[in-house]
Image (cartoon, rainbow, N blue to C red; front, top):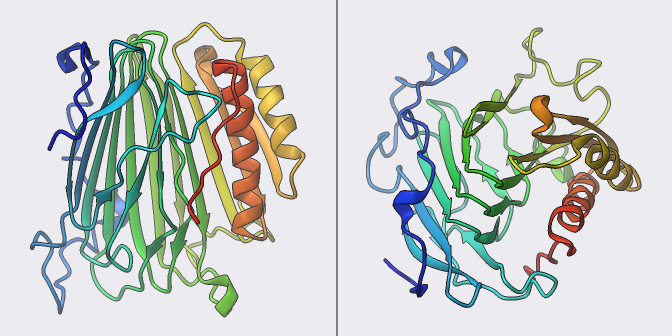
Length: 325
């Protein structure tokens, strides 16, 4: 369904190609034992168990980014575009919404976002993503982001909360054109901490890759499984005594001094309550920020500070306030 027509929008065929395996990726070996387990309720692949979201952004003749095409199937719903990014009036904002209680066992969801040439889009979620309690099978979310030449795409969702027994697999694949940038965050809460439910999920796996015109820029995998000596999140060097962790990925094919940018993002993130660190990507292709804290709000504040610093450095404007109340 087309929601806004952007006059003079560039042809979507000019976008870089999404990875060939997008939407058809195999489960990691750690999940192979789960995927064939039958469900007592609705089966895997049944209506309501396969969510889909597609959105395409393009600039109009006046230089304003528009949401020119979108499609959603439960549990996804997309808000209309918002214009509260006052520092970046040429951009647009949309929030991904869900009418369901969360991600359930047997769910297989897919999200595909495309930003055409020179577009500026900010996408978030209306509320936290709850990965519900599980006793069979698992849940999976595949995310594919394609960012055209000169475009800038931000995906900054609310936190992901892993309930008791949750088995959650997430794969994110990004393709960048020339002079393009993507900013992604992920904040993970290991249970309903207010109910003293911590580290009772079964397995969490998240893999993020970014490819540019000349090849792979980033490949990062997080695999956490309480009780597994090889993947226990409470080990020293992982979460240790902290409860919540977050990651921000800034990947770019622009000509940027990433060493200086890394110092800038680290300085801003470290000014918050959370513990934070930053490092540059190979090929001067961006920065990764990690943050640890006792509360989701602390970690999100650190990632937001890094986001704001990156926006000021690359767009000469602050990151927008995420108004959701």
